[in-house]
Image 1: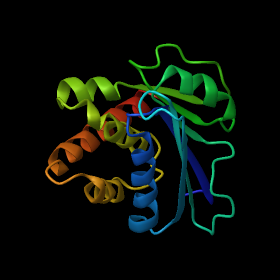
Image 2: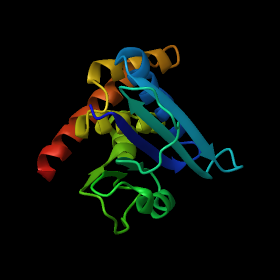
Image 3: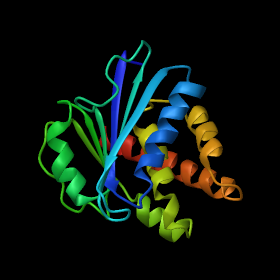
Image 4: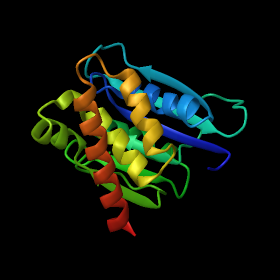
Length: 186
């Protein structure tokens, strides 16, 4: 792992963007034995407004808790892609929900990977609410900022009672999608 990794997860309120960041930071800090911070911001609306969750992961003490230039950017809305692609570290990895972000802005990213997270959550798992966990699995399958095992433990910590099995299926499906997308992009 590089000394400092920055991951930005973006979309709109109601997609579980903040929770996704919390789960990723928990996986890093508690189960990967790394330093991690998670910060977020969102619009005044409770649903539908812009939302972003920044996660910084490091082997060393973190001196600044927010992303400066994320090397992994996840976009789950067209507005978030327009707003945050220009903030990416040159050569970074851009991961978009292919059904929600049909047009991707130009940027200095080295790889663009399209993941059908919302479609898989809705059609395959019958619960749109786990699209964020599908996307987290895809992130780890594409760029292992944490181990799949640590992500699984963090998801189980965060899943509401009675939804553990659904969330683990969403994570597993996302890992498969991410690994397949990463292989296809090489």
